[in-house]
Amino acid sequence: MADIKAPVERPLSPHLFIYKPMLTTMMSIVHRITGGALYFGTLLVAWWLLAAASGPNAYAGFGSFMGSFLGRFILLGYTWALVHHALGGIRHLIWDTGRGFGPQERERLAVATLIGSIAWTIIIWVVGYLFMGGPR
Amino acid sequence: MAAGRMSTPLARVLGLGSAKSGTEHFWRQRLTAVANVPLTVTFVVIVVGLLGRNHAAVVQILGSPLVAIIMLLFIASIFTHMRIGMQVIIEDYVHDEVVKLVLLMANTFFAVAIGLACAFAILMLSFKV
Image 1: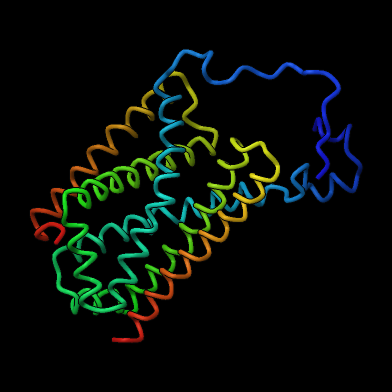
Image 2: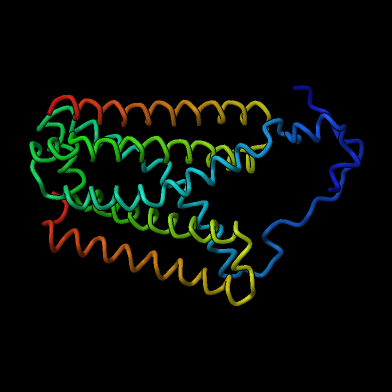
């Protein structure tokens, strides 16, 4: 891995900051951030599964953390990140087919992802609380 | 094809490009993305269905064959997806060669270790029932 220095300082293409921030830009950035958050969120999934496999005491310990304010806050963030990344991913799969690139279409897809992620997060939590008794 | 002028016939046949792995990364990201959609929906349904249940009930449900198989598929798909996703993030932002290699290794170690831990727990739950 020899570091080869370029003989001249070549001009680089301008980075994101020189462009006007747009909804589609923000959604792209948020897609990457939620992906990164979900990466570390798998630690929660692993803790949950290992606690269940380890026995009632370990599972109660996991339950008391997830039931705390901090636990619920993290779980709420995890839910939103999961839904947002999933919907953003579907948007990318639509784009992969070559569709949805028009000026209005891409804006509509961005808005749908954002509204959809918030709506589904609320729906999942309402169902969780009303019908299942909430995280305990 | 613009690539035709600058590449040898062999390179064109292999189609591997500068990363030497062709479109495999791109393709695997899409393949797992498609798999993640139904698997994530099912995962959320399973988690919501287990909220507030006691440990014995959780073990029984998570250990039942259908739920365990879905969970194992979910784990396999998301850990593959997130490993190559994080790889792109590291390659985009980390330009120091040594730090980049260390982080790329750490990324694989994390994904394999945590993924295996999840799969192991699911198998334990299955064979306890």
